[in-house]
Length: 363
Image 1 (cartoon, one colour):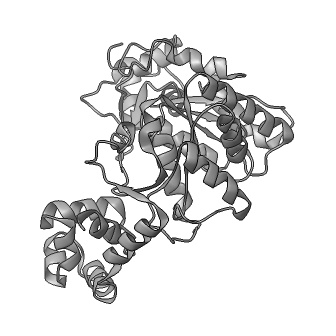
Image 2 (cartoon, helix red, strand yellow):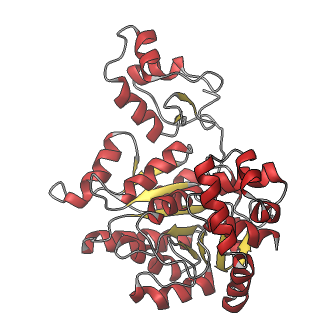
């Protein structure tokens, strides 16, 4: 029952993956944490208010681990945790990996190079056609396509991939919940040929706050993320941001200069994302396999090189420190840092400081 106690902990209000992981480390096991009294929860590092709230939840939901286990058995749903061999290796590397991963289907597809594809829900015919064509081309080349099963670009990406291979849908609800409803048949087909995954327990309804967290999993399981259509403020750009923060590749498909849903893609391209017009453009980046930590192929401008030369893997520098050390040798340093992050050469830490990414450490 250990993994189901962990799943129940993660479902508690105001807990989440990081707090649940810390409780398990401090109290020994997830089951011990689930049975802990208020004093033990405070001793584990929770504030008095949060410990009281969690203890109240635990008392009212004593049988929740058993209920989650029963739901998984009824629905043919597997539950994975980070210590499992089948848990996606790339997902373990992100800043906040989900402590529980529910799955309909098989995670074996992650033995292949994974590419995430995201974009607008209210996509144009051009965008949906481009997404379907690129996903089909990637599947034909042996890639597994990952998306979020939303309307628009996500749905087109899944449909394209299913014509030739496997695809993975990452949900912001339980894997037994069809959201949107019209994709129920599509999700069943994805589960048959690939996997439908979520960090949320079976039966969990979609909630707006779950989707930004879901996006970190979409980018987290993938070597690169392709943005097909995205407005300047959109969830797709949040996914691209997660990819950048983890040093993963970001690609963007160009669109009409008159299209609002292409402005986000054009901004990414201006900042250094790889422009792609076909699956071949994406696949070319991974010829010979994925080689993380190798020398980056991009040529840097003089100003980018000046910023990059100041960074290392060992010492994190703030924006102000970089501006001071550059002594006027580069203008608009924040923009240059964003461009370097898009190229996968620089990472931003949780403290808003900057280091070289693993990809670019040997330059």
